[in-house]
Image (cartoon, rainbow, N blue to C red; front, side):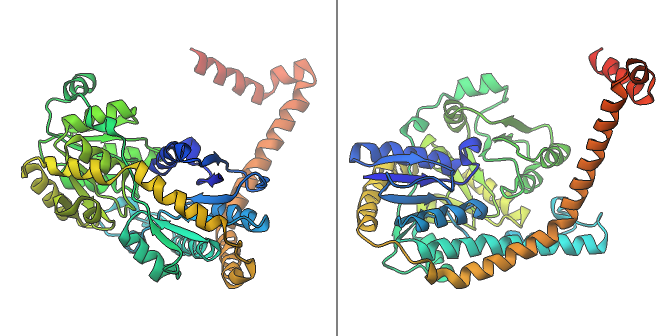
Length: 432
C-alpha cells in the first residue's frame, strides 16, 4: 500500500514534534508493507497513492488545499488532526491581564486594538473551520488520546466509526542519556534542575513559566528554538541568573538533559500531547503538564498538572514534582505503552479500511466551505492595512533603486550625488 503524507506546510523545515512523530511513524510502517511519501505540494498527482494522510491540521491555509487535492482526485483521506481546544489562550489574548505584557495591546490606538482582537477571533474561526471541513471529508480520523477523540466528536461532529486512537510513541534512546556530560557541556551548576524542552514562544507560555519560577534557586533550563526574537528578548529581560537558554539541541543532548534533570514541565496554553514530556518521562524525570491536554491519560497519577494562566499553580506543581521521589514505574509505563509499533499496527488497519471506501463527496462540505470563504474574505479586509503599508514601502524602495540606476548612468553624476555619498559612508562604517 502507498500512502501520501501531507504535513503542515512548514513542518519539514521547523522539525517540530508533529514532524518527528510523522517520521517515526513512517519508519514503523515500512516493515508492515506501507510505503509512505511526504509532500507539501497541493497540486501533486496522487495517482501512485492509495490513501492520503493529512498529518496535523495546525496550518489551515495548507490543510484545506491538501484536502481538496485529495478529494478532487478521488483519494480517500485519513487525518491525524493533533487538536486541543484553545479557549483559555484565546481568552487570555482577548482580555489581557496587566501582569502579562506578552498579551498587552495598550500601546496601540483604540481602532488598532479592535482590529487585532477581531483578527484573533477570525483566525481561530478559520482554524476550527478547517478542522471541521477536513473531518467531514475524511474516511478516518485519528486522535492522539481518548480525550482528544471525545473533543473531535463533540466539537467537529466526527462519527464514532470514523474515530480511532493512535498514541504517540517515544524512542528508547531517551532512556540512555549521560547526566554528567550534559552538566559539563552546558555549565549547569548542579543536576536535579527543572527542564523544559519546547519552543520559546507564547503558545508554550515560556514567559509565564519564567515568572512562576524566577525567585527560586533551582535552575530552570530551557531547550528549544525561539521563532520570535522579540518574545525571546522579553523572556531574557525578566529571567534571573538561574534561567538558562540553551537553544535547540540534538536528540542525544536532550536525552542527556533528561538524565540530569529532576522535573520536566510543559506549562503550555494547550498540549495535544508533548513528545518532549514522553522523552523526559522515559529518561526518569517527574513530569508537570498543562491542565489543557491529556497528560493524566498518558502518565496517570504520576503526572502533576498546572493552570497555565495561574503562575502560583505552575509554581506549586513544580514544587510538588521536585519534592516527590523519582518514579521508575512511570518510565516503565511509557516504555511499554507508547511505542511507534503499536501506532503503526492501528494505522495499517485504518488504511486498509479507508482504501476500500469511496472518497467523500465535496457537496457534503458545501456549507463549511461557504463559511470558510466568508472568514477568509474578512481576514483579508482586516489585514489590508498591513498589505497597503508593505506595498507602499516596496514602491518607495523601487523608486529609490530606479533613481540610483539613473544617476549611475553617468559616472560623475553618480559619484557626486548625496545618495552615493551616503552609500559610501554606510559601506565604510559596516566594513571597518
